[in-house]
Length: 210
Image (cartoon, rainbow, N blue to C red; front, side, top):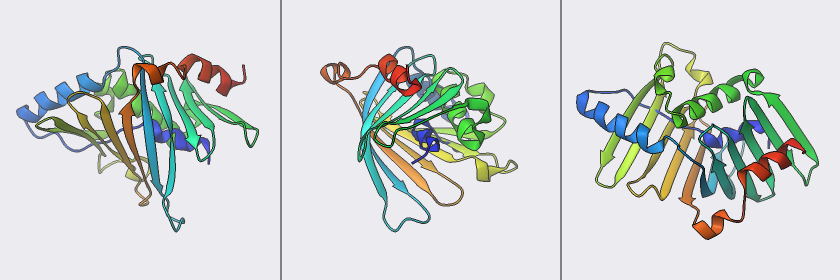
């Protein structure tokens, strides 16, 4: 497992198709825009090109309005992957492996992380040159899709689909790479009691080695 798997944090797209869709898009972007901290329990399924069976994991995701992100993997082993300021962090205590890299030097992984942060921070106008964005809402369910523009190097940009419910208790994030690999997260918002178990700030300090 490498730091690129922090891509947990990301989102995806499809073309915008009219005024009605624009209204739904504005509503959904406002819904996922963060004004405080959020914590979700997640289950992850990863389909890899060279793996005979899908990989499964589970843990906790924490995020803040400033763009800080922590993925605390609890199963199959405990691993912290994080984004803070302009750095990516990775800490595997079992293997005694710690890595850090500037976000701008992290290649495609860093670019994908920046897309996710941009959406969370409500700066979606910065994505229009790289992605087509579309939104759909049916009853209590909604979907936000981001698709790389065809005239760009789409092999470096994933397609991302985020879906949820009107209570914002559940989310599904599906990330599809151009080579056929995919990662799916099924997320459930942590209860008030569960949120006491983990602190974003403490996990960032642990990941950085402080």
